[in-house]
Length: 317
Image (tube, rainbow, N blue to C red; front, side, top):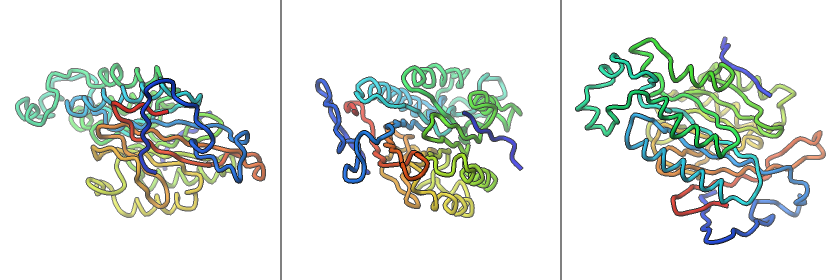
């Protein structure tokens, strides 16, 4: 049994902003006006996905700073007043260290090899750098930031017995790595940690079957990618089990956010569900438009999902 859980309270679209951005009408935010009036929309929840900051690996650090700037710019120029949430699907650091102790530096790899790999050799405290250059700036512009761990975040554990990054993530999310957070009254944010193990998926199925959440829209995020390069880091049986739980609920699963493979994509689909990865040069923005269903106890329903690949010279509205 797992006790590490808790419950608490298209294609890329690019828009250049040269001046005052126009206020979007119903068609621009995906409102099906034949069946829903604009006034019936509960609200739009905006998600940003920034994967694999991987502080301690210079190439990913540069990408991290670039994507943080993209997200801050997008939030700044957005004219729509909406709930804003940021997801970071793992690999916050390259070696899972907060202390930079001797054994970590020695066992991670000798300096010449690390330099040849493009890693940042003198980084003494990768977690502190992540907090200063990624987490704090995102928290200053987004409503909430949710994180999970990746495979690199536990490397230090093998050599020192410490779980510095996992402990930090737990501290941010009620003491848990696998969790569901009712960020606002309309969307459930679910972290399945490094990847959806059998136990994690069984726990998620139980939570999603609870009458309290039986019709609530949700998003799922974890570190390992589902398809393509490096997706073989977790088993097909676990993927099949995840699909068996999500397929019947695809109408209320807004999207899945992943990392691990260092590229950015906003157009993926898996079992009829949007899949986004913001681990390359670009962060991903996902607008989830919700409406009330007056025939179903006034529960929110997903009306539309729009994904946007952010760029340095593109301002998303």
